[in-house]
Amino acid sequence: MQMTKITALLLALGMAAGSAQAASSIDGGNITFKGAITTSPCGITADSAEQVVDLGTVTASKLKKGEEVRRTPFSIVLTDCELGTQKTAKVKFTGAPATGNDALLGLQGTEGAKGAGIAIMSDNNTVIKPGADSPAFNLNNGDNVLRFQAQVQRISDTAEVTAGRFNVQTGFLVSYE
Image 1 (cartoon, rainbow, N blue to C red):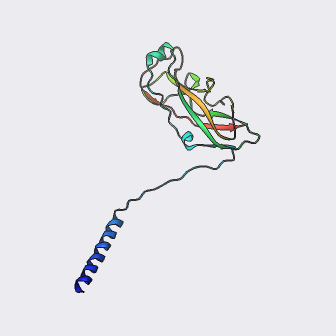
Image 2 (cartoon, rainbow, N blue to C red):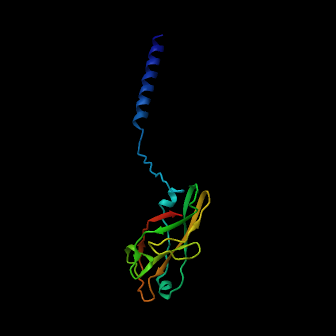
Image 3 (cartoon, rainbow, N blue to C red):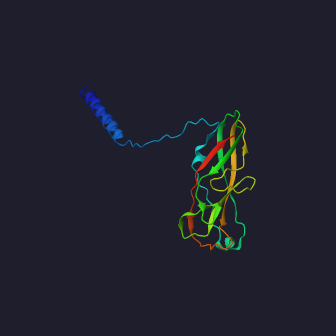
């Protein structure tokens, strides 16, 4: 009987020690929830609101010759659209235009890259100037994908193109009609 009490006591102490050890190894962190409530007929997916479009590497020689370089597709997804009288959407890109060519977004944060800018085109190949509305996109109830393309272009026929890295940041605004 004495042995049973000692065994029970040792088991209880062992379980308490295991619980204390487990509690001390719990890690934590933080979670941030963000979003917005809108009066617009559509929402914008989180992936569309914050995205990076990798234009890859283009050769300075192609730009200097005026040759076309690849276009990189990207999109803005409007979600949960409930259309009333507003059946179209236009997008305005708000980034700073390139010095010497206001149809292109200017290079920012460059590490040597000069003489080029970024053209944004709608799905019908119309260049959308920074600060100007895109052509209208017809919308449907539900989700809608607005398709665009981005392309590195030489600012002008006389611009000296210098190799290097660059970043370009632009905001966008969606308006409904």
